[in-house]
Amino acid sequence: MSETAPQQPKPAPRHAISRPIFERTFSINSEQAIRVIRNSYNRLMVSLYAIDVILRIIGREETVDEIESLVSQMIAECAEQLQQEKSRLEKLKADNGISETPTYTHPREFVAKIASPQIAQFVELIRLLDQLMIVMDTLWLCQVISNKHCIAARLEWQQRLQRLANKIVTMERHAHQAAYEQGHGEEVRLARQESGLLDDPSKLAEDDDSVFDDNESSPSSDKAGMQ
Image (cartoon, rainbow, N blue to C red; front, side, top):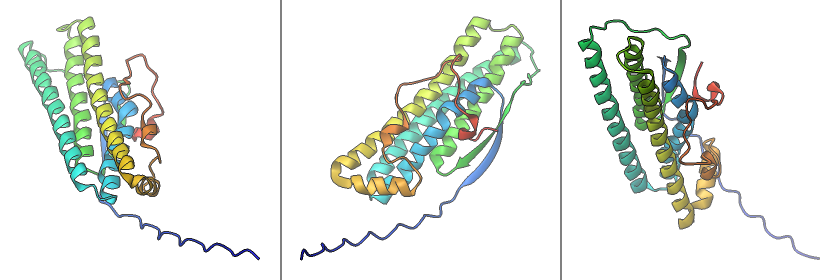
């Protein structure tokens, strides 16, 4: 009679981690800021959460700190560029004696779940983009800047934020790939499952360099906290 092979003990289940979170609601007016939220925010939020939670679970503190510092620097540099352009356009508005501010036909309510400082930074970046677009739209409506210039500038700033989001997602994917190559694959897989993330970080984005232009259709707004 053949002997039954002894069963391997099952690993003890991980307990869910109780993490702090802010839930903030904003009104977003411009179509460009709305598109950034729809096309990039949810994917970026998952990547930032994965960097903070998953890599710390498998004990890669130095990698996490390095990535988070770089992400914060990248977002801060983009915010400075946005603020400089906003200040320049606000001066142009004042120089032309314009005091009006347009309303928008389809503003959206954005519910942001702030689970890390970097997520908070990017949310503020979206709000700054929205403010910049409002000033730009004001100057266009008042015929201070041309339609051609306004269309090009809108797309440029929208894509700048989307490319930044894509770079951060790519950094997260590379960090996880490095963890796999160093023998932490099973730990990463289990941690991602227990955190509600995809098993394979490469599925987060099919194309790292993808951006959406003004004619591109958008995914469902519910996934990005849009109401």
